[in-house]
Image (spheres, rainbow, N blue to C red):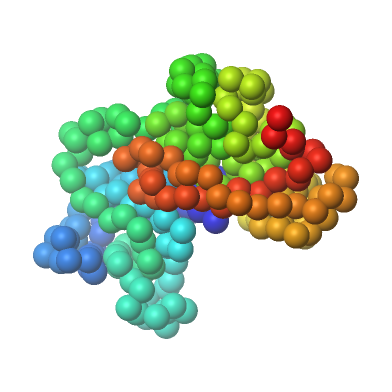
Length: 267
């Protein structure tokens, strides 16, 4: 599932493109059907939470994977492994073909708009400045709404950028918190610190893990009706309101939550 660590790894894979010139681009979405980046130099590629940005000359390409999107990198002429109709953007650089399949968001806008277009996002857990300023800012944003559930607070990209449903489920389990517990009942600094640690530990892994075992990598996420790895109690699931922020393209959706009734009681 694409969360902050997924986009960080994707950005790292794309770093060899920085400094190179785009030889062909094909936007396959109606709003950008006539747009082109052909001939533009890629000056920078970077992640911000779940978002990926490319600076190409005086413009920024912004993509978001949502649930099903992915970038695939091929040698020129190689047959695509996914159907052509799923491609939303095709980019050629020095004999390499990059295809963005099922991308949830594809935008192209002037580089000077970056600040205003990202102002709604909270601190990125994987940003270099996280320890200096990001952590305290994220904590302050979360505790400013004490009556909100911790599950909703963690998903709200206005609070901190990068956490999705899998991290939310696993962080809440490891801290012994029901996702519907109010923020006021939680040790928010400890929750935020654990989320940042887990994401930083996982950013270098091909398959993220919360248990230390990549074969059985989650405690509760996706494990409804299965026994808790810690106590054996049957894992339960329900839904919880999604983040209500325009910062998250998935905003407003109810999202599934998983928890162990014994390890994460809702008091």
